[in-house]
Amino acid sequence: MLNERVRAGLTAGVIAAAATAGAVVGFGMTQGAPAEAFTSAGRLLLGVAPTEGGGRQLGAFAVGVLLHVGGALAWGLAFALIAGRLRGVRLLAAALLFAAAVYLVRERAPALLRIGHGARAFPPQVVVLHVVLALALAAGIRLAHVGGRTGATPRQRELGLDYVERNPPGGTEQ
Image (cartoon, rainbow, N blue to C red; front, side):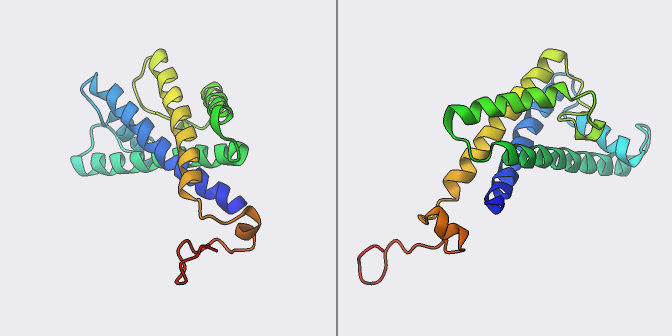
C-alpha cells in the first residue's frame, strides 16, 4: 500500500511540477523574464550574484528548476500520504484544501520549498498558482490510479501477485 502511495505521490509531484512551472513561466513572460523565478531560486541556494557571468547564471537556472521539481515532488508525496486513497469529488476537494494549506503555510515554509519561489507574482497570481497545484495534484493521483491498474485484487497486489494474464494461451481468461 505504501508503495502505491509513493508511486502516486511521485506521479502527482511530477505533474504538479510541470503545471506550476508552466504557470511560473507564464507569470515571468508578462514581465519579459520567463526564467527569472528559477534563476533567482538557484542564485539563492548557490550564492550567485545577478551580475556574475552567463555560465553561473545558467547553473543557477538549472538548480532553480531542480529545486522547483524537488519541492513539487515533496508536496506530491505529502498529498499522496494524506489523500492517496480518495477518488472523485473527495479527491478534488482534498487537493483544494491541501493547496490552500500550502498557501497558508507559505510564509512559514522554507523559502526554497515554496511553490513559485522567486516568481514576481501578484497575490491573485499566487492564488492561481495554488489552484493549478491543487488541480495537478488531483490529476496526478487520479492518473497514478488509472495507470497502476493491473487487474489484480488488493490482496494479490499485497502478496506481490500484480500480474494477471489477460489472454492466456488457452484462450480463456483467468
